[in-house]
Amino acid sequence: MSTTRRSPLLSPPRGPVPRPTNWDDEDDDELPGSPLGKSWLRYVPLTLALTLMLAPHPSLLIVLVNYHLRVLHSPSRFLTHLLVTYTLTFCAVSSLIVILARDPGPVPSPKRSEAPDSESSSMDFAQALLDTEDDEPLIRTQGKWCRKCVAPKPERSHHCSSCGRCVLKMDHHCYWLGDKCIGHRNYSAFVHFLTCVSLLSIYIACLCVQAVYFAFTNPLAIDENTPLHDIYLAFYGIIMTLVIGSFWTYHLYLTTTNQTTIENISPYLLLRHLPPLPPQTSTRQKLSDPPLEHELTYPQRRLVRDAHYQLKIYDVGWKRNWAQVMGWSRPRGWMYRLWLGGGGKGDGRTFPHNPRAEPLLTRLAAELVSIDKNQ
Ligand SMILES: [Zn+2]
Ligand SMILES: [Zn+2]
Image (cartoon, rainbow, N blue to C red; front, side):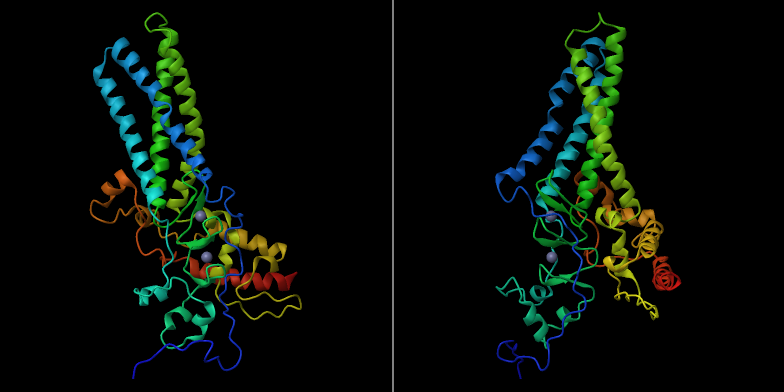
């Protein structure tokens, strides 16, 4: 006998519809919707970023030709510097294209994966609750549900208000790079982009500081315009090194410790990973299980922040952390990533946990209850 799906309207459930206990009650991304909306204005920051990237190149060519070819008479240095700067520029542009072209991390719908030919792209949540025969994976999905997408919310995914959807392993929403999210599928390209731009800035800064020094010590050996380009590029390189380089260093740290920006700046996300709390005997307001941020007292908040400082839930050693992002565990995988960036390894829904996490979280859960009792 074939099983047909029951309509929720025709066969209402017996008793009250259970409210899912795994709603994500906390807003992941409290940013308001994109101030630029969907208009062409959203591409203005991207155009500005591209202009900032490409604007120094005419000056760079003038310096390379005038200083290295005409003054120093060194074609080998000219070719070396030309090759390095334009290889880094090519790599930066290629990873930028990957960032813009790839979806940052769509959250797959179990419904759609089970019925790929279905024309319905959205599912009513009541239907998901009421159907019990063939929607088992949807109802029993471990983890959170997104209130806004009305869909399962895999581990490390977050809802982006600007994009209006959940993104796998969301890092942040970037207005500068096409007003889109950086997530599981384009994070390695993002790190690659920052690396190329930072190295290019450092290289140009070093090259031009040296050229400025030469121009001041040998004023008659060089024409009057080249030092102006030298000074402009030296300042430009130093400023870009400080701005993009600090951002790059931060993301190197995040990748080495296997954190996203959201996880790094939100210590209370740790509460989602807590095991069941021990029995609470305090006369004060009892904590929910898992506790919510607004329920915590000041000492409890301090405990969570200290634990967040000590424990990186997904840190499985720097080599494996980098391999997760850059795909270095594959033979010659790093070569592809070196040129194009690309997406992270795995399905973006499950991640290995730090082996130290479980005992530390159990201790944190016990301390959260006991510290309140001791007040
Ligand atoms: Zn969502
Ligand atoms: Zn977004």
